[in-house]
Image (cartoon, rainbow, N blue to C red):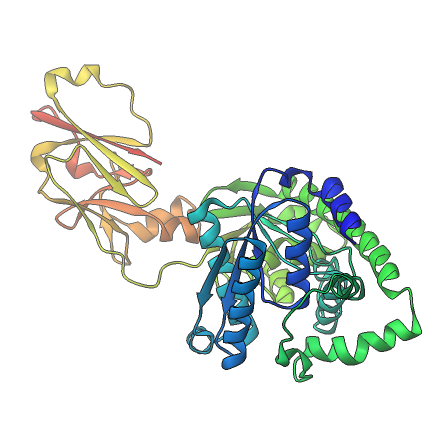
Length: 443
């Protein structure tokens, strides 16, 4: 196995030769074998062990074992203790999911703080099959059937081609010691039921199960590539606007598809959406209707769908601006302020929708930046008197998101400028103006 492992590293992970690697080690068979294989392959490795404090003395004995192994192999080891049960309760997670979250958060912190290049885990071919079957029983989509990725960002899984039987044979042949997790024998967990009851029967019936499964994964990954290419081609046509805050899709592009729901699933599933029939109905719903996930929402806006993160629920405090301020950071950008004598006004460059000029003497400091609210009104520059902002937004055909994110520059509570849209008549420069304030917004 050592020879095949090193060949696999050369063929698939040849970038590891001079990298600092962190191995996630539990003390169990798989991670102990991975440690020895990497050590024998002269890779630069360090160990990281999580003590989740879930099995009393057994957890501490695992920790002691890993520390002794690291000393024997002359490898540095990091150990972290977690109160997994409390974390699971506070975050409403299962123990397994809590442990997974704690483990990977810590690995990521170690990677950033110590400077590791990659994290290696000991997932193998049997783990891959178990994960496939778990996802299958839960009604997963295609992406849940494509297996555990060998490379996922900085997380690498170099044992995926090897079976549990091969790994155990290597350990016994080389007289390696490892720890047995007593919880792995319990069949109250679905993964253990599959491991101890289902998969052995499948292997007995089909001795080439793992090899055939590997072939199936290759076919499914090929199919996934085709799906992804098709979805990406649609997105190139459908996305009409995208920035850090929202993505706008043309509904007309979805209406040309034979099966728009399939595309909606692939596009919006990564944002936590599951009610895809509701999203499909959104294509023909009234403007303003919304669908929510835990983190995002999709808004029907006339002929478009808009994807955006959920808005902050807490009140957003106003930002004060003083006469001496030359610049001020605000949501979505920066405001710049420049006081100009009227005789020098001709030197001011041509204004854009990101700039306004106002009469300094009409302002009451401090000015404020705030989000608009129902009941706000202003006097549009060169307009016909007082107008509610809600009516102005409707006339300008602003989307719900554009309205929600609309910022106002105010003097006392009077609107001086709807940022990036319209200035107020009451603060304009006239023949009587002595000093001019130029205000510019940069995203």
